[in-house]
Image (tube, rainbow, N blue to C red; front, top):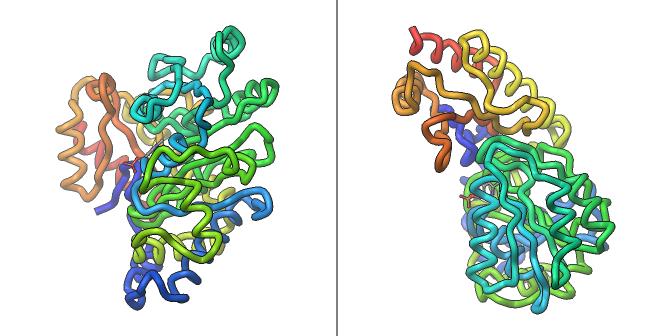
Length: 356
Ligand SMILES: *Cc1c(COP(=O)(O)O)cnc(C)c1O
């Protein structure tokens, strides 16, 4: 079965085999070597200096990393502006609410790009100054790649820290870590890094960690950062998921790093889009507004999602539905993981066959 959902991904044989390494006690040096390699390699993906950035590992899915980041990095008397144009932006707002963080949301239609003028207006007209802005880099709901660079400019001019959910972009899209407004990026092992679910992480500036709040016990980013820097861990980590994460990171490096992965994903996404277009299936958004990781398509008028899904599953493909109000309108195809050009050809022929 080939997974075309946005994580977990179809594993390479190399990553799958890495799960079969020796059992490890998480209080032994062998485990801390593994943890150190994962942390170092996470910094290396975007060439970050350990003097400026801390890699913090967590056991959990991507949401654990996003929750840990939001709960810690908006300081006690801080104020957060959440940019929402999909399910994941909505989730960040829910997290802020749950922790009783002082926050506001700039809501958009789920097919729309962040409205920079409206966001600037909200930042400038606030009665109480915002200290942080949270945004989803790749809003997996629609495939839209939000313009981090433009938002970083807005934040930088106002000395606001930017907290980024990069769960479905880290490892395959450009992220300008040199921009001083960028305070942290949260992501997970099982998307563009091609490993298994269970390991997630936050890359955070030391300067942001210094002002971190402690609102949660298990997901306390400050505590996790401190202990991991001392070759320690507060709890039992998902050891086998760490094996896979390290192997996925080694494989990414061997394959040419994030920009090579970006090029590979782009070729596959364009191939799928071109193939679908010949069948009369239109992309939901213009390709230049989308990530290379996942693209959304309009469901053909003659076929509902479940028939398309079940028909393709019988051919060996798992595709992904639209979320919320988009479920009757779109379907989504992610080309993360071990996916090759011939797989995309078979997918397009599979759809052609179903459409008759
Ligand atoms: C997948 C994803 C998450 C995390 O979802 P989990 O189910 O916790 O892995 C968060 N944000 C974005 C943008 C995602 O695509």
